[in-house]
Image: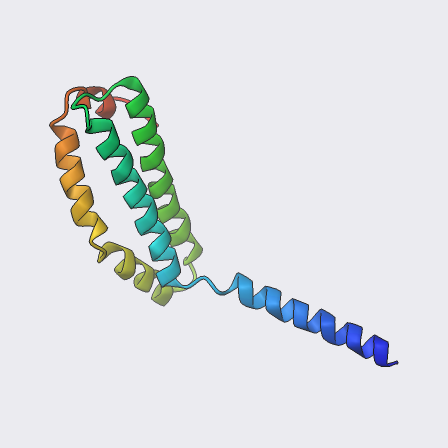
Length: 124
């Protein structure tokens, strides 16, 4: 009888732990993921434009990184479909980060780099 109760208690504890872990992602955590992805995009762009020419390999890396952060934003936003408060908090958190100032600077440099036209004409 005692072993049976221990097993039931263990199953309950495991179930509660799994539920807590799956719900532990906060809007701030999700915003941090977006900021990290945008920073990675900026890193790729800065690396690509370091030689002042965007070649085909650079285009692929930039487009992949851009798609990654854009898909991440879309997926997280969609996950908050039933929770307007968390969605608003998430959007507030990630849009208020300094990474967007960095992105604006990087984008301006990118636009003034040889080969930018190839990048803007490439779909991904």
